[in-house]
Image (spheres, rainbow, N blue to C red):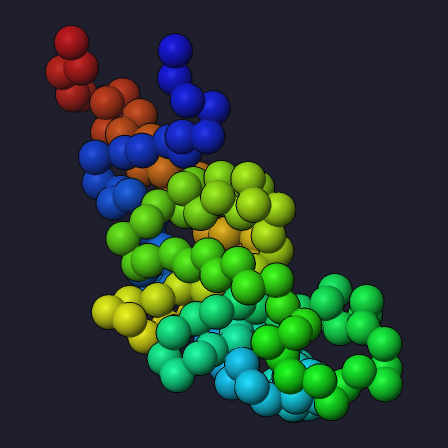
Amino acid sequence: MPDKRQIPQHPRVPPLTVRRLLARTPSPAHAVAVDAPVRAALQAMAEHAVGAVVVVDGSRVVGVFSENAAASRDPAATLEPLRQAIDGMAVVATGEQTVQECIALMDEKRMRYLPVCEDGRLIGLLTLDDLLRGVIAHYELVFRELELDQRILFLRGTYSC
């Protein structure tokens, strides 16, 4: 029985990986040090007009601080370090992973943001919306290729059997 999470494939369309998705629509990640105060994360989010920042310890991703985490914080707690404001569960994707694997991972872990690391460095931050837009674009490309196949197959004067 086929997996319901598999997206359609076509011989002329390469699999939809995180690397291909980021190449098509870059999703920059803004990082804040784990020892920085919550206020620094809020300022970075406002400055870059993003809903989340990646929390790093040196070059290692340790978590994500998002607007949901900010909304649940006491405004007086903006001076506490980010270390205390994140759950510490750092889940990251790699460029080799497929988009459907990332969607399944985010669904399983109940995440809204997924940092992407390549060779130990942060290269992007994906949202569920980014992944879903990528899947829709992939479907459109596969459907165009299938339509082209059908046109070629049924061209007048061609032998189709």
